[in-house]
Amino acid sequence: MRELAAAGFSHLVNHRPDEEEPGQPSADQIAAAAELSGLKVVNAPVRGLPDAEAVTATRQAIDSLGPNDKALLFCRSGMRSAAAWAMAERIRGADPDVLRAAAAEAGYDLSRLPL
Image 1 (cartoon, rainbow, N blue to C red):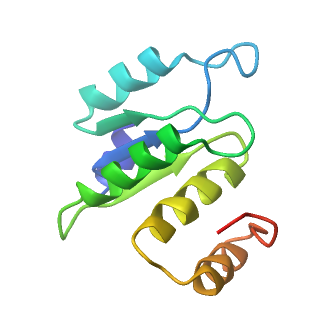
Image 2 (tube, helix red, strand yellow; image 1 turned 45 degrees about the vertical axis):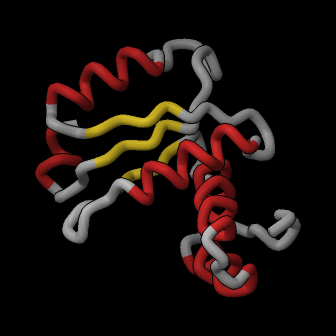
C-alpha cells in the first residue's frame, strides 16, 4: 500500500468480495492497510456483472477525485473493475464505443457489456 501511495494513488476501490479465494485478505484488512498509507478506500464487491450498488460506489469514488488524485480499481483479474468503471462512466454519458476501446487497449473485452 505504501508503494501505491508513493506512486501517486490516493484512492483504492476494491471490487473483490470477501472469501473469493482462500488466503485472500478481507476487505477490512485491505482497508486498514490502505488507510495506514493514507489511501481512501471504497469497498464495492462484485460477483459477476457489477450491480447498481457497485457501479454507484465506483462512480462516487471517481467523482471524489481531485485534479491530482489517482484511483486504483481492482479485482482478481481486473475484468470486474473494468466493467464497473465503464458502467460508472456511462452514467455520466460517456460514449460506449469509446469506453469499450479504452478497456480493449488495457486488455479487457467489454464488447458484451450492456452499456
